[in-house]
Every structure is written in C-alpha cells, then in structure tokens.
Amino acid sequence: MVKDIPDIFELQTPTQWKALSHPLRLRILELLADGARTNEELSAALGEQSGKLYFHTKRLLDAGLIVLDHTRQKGPITEKLYRAVARRFLAPPPTLGGDAPPLEVALTSALDLYRSDWRESGGLPGELQLGFHLALPLAPEQRQEFARRIRALFDDFQISGSDAPDARRVSLAVLLHSYGTKEGKTDEASREDESPDEPRNVAAGGDTPDARG
Image 1: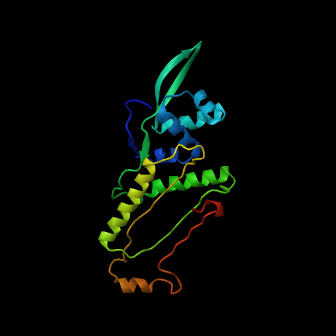
Image 2: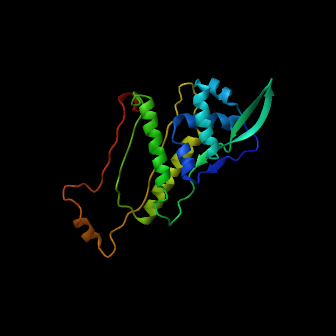
Image 3: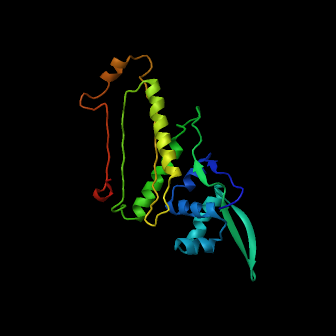
C-alpha cells in the first residue's frame, strides 16, 4: 500500500467529478492507490495502449486526483511514477447557495460514467442495471433514518469489498432530497396541480435475468 496518503479525498470541483466519469480512470485510481506506477506499468496492468493511458492519466493529474510521486532513470529515459492522492474519493456534504443544486455535478458525473461504460460494453450485456425513482411521505425522523440506513449500507459494502477473481466494480449514485409545497399553497392545493392520472409514488427499475439474487 501507498504510505502516508489520506484515506479519503473530498471532491470539490466539477473538473474532479468529470475526471471520475470514465471507467478506465477509476481503474487507474485503484492501481495508483496501491502504489506509484509509470504510464507503461499502468498500460501492462490494464491491458491498454500506453497512448490511451497517457490521455486518461493526464486528465486525473490535471484534476489533482493523482500526483507525480517520484522519477527514476531507466538508461537515458527518465520515468515518471504517479500515485493517487487518496485511497477513496467521496462527495463533501452539500452546501447551500449558488446558482445550481449542490449535488448536480456529482450526479451528472455518475450518469456520465454509466453512459460511458454502457456504450463501451455494448449495453452492459448480462450485467446488473437497477434504477428507482420514489416519492415517499416521510416524517422528519423517518427522513433522517432513511438517510442513515442508506449511508450504513454503502459503508458496509465498501468495507467488505471482494477480491474474488469474478468481482466486478459497481457504481452507485443516490439522490435523496425533500421537496415541499409551493410557497403560499397548502398541501391540498398543491395536489390539485398534479395530473389526476399521475401516481404520487413512482418506481422504475430494471434487472437482467441472470443478475437477480
């Protein structure tokens, strides 16, 4: 393991989120969290051409997610070894204010990653794809408990990740927010604005047959 690097790095800028929106860059970060490597070593480990790796490592370097760890001489060539700035990359707590929703960049990055992987794999054949959109009436204490359970589930699986040969990376993006009535309207008045045929609770999901547990 890499010595003396933080366990967690909080993503702060759209550039950093965008850098994580490609599956190959996530694989590069995983390797560089375990030790400093050259571009050629990354190429050999990932089975990708070094020119392609150079483009993606530069994106990570420009975003500040990896750094130049040290150099070494190999004959007349000076090799550059890069390492990740942390072992895990997380979103900071949302802040109020600004011109855009605070979670928009994170969710856009997650969707970009899904699109990229879906296209490169020809539609993720045989892989788990699951999505939900729910609208639930919850009391304040229920909302807090709901958020706590989601976070706990995420933490549990992150800690117990598998090193099995058939293990696959799984991407999870969660948006949980309260939405209220329009200013000056009662709950009943707001409901009248809804289409009478529109369900108040909506769930949409998809799962490939061989991925169901």
